[in-house]
Amino acid sequence: MYKTVHYGRIVRDYRERAKMTIEEAAEKYGISKTGLEKIELGISDPKLSTVLKIAYVLNIDMGILNTCVGLARLYVND
Image (cartoon, rainbow, N blue to C red; front, top):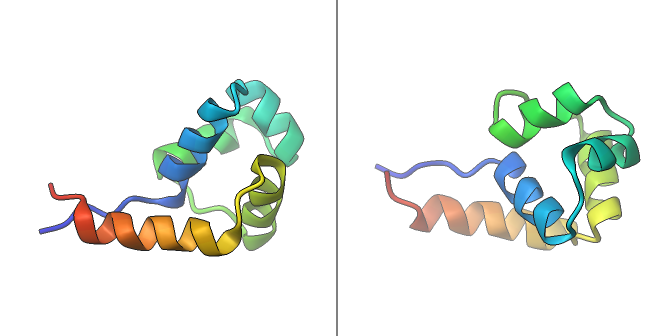
């Protein structure tokens, strides 16, 4: 059985690499801190407009983001 890695996990990793606090990131994404926490924890799925904004702010190519999630689903075991 494989564990699904959600967008939030990858978003958190990129945010931390950018040395951005959750508060700074939420402000730049135009969402609440609580909303971002829920996305990063996989509790909430972001709207497409939010995903696009996050990708833009963190300079993540959408193709790379989708590939990372897809590969993680294949290789991350429970």
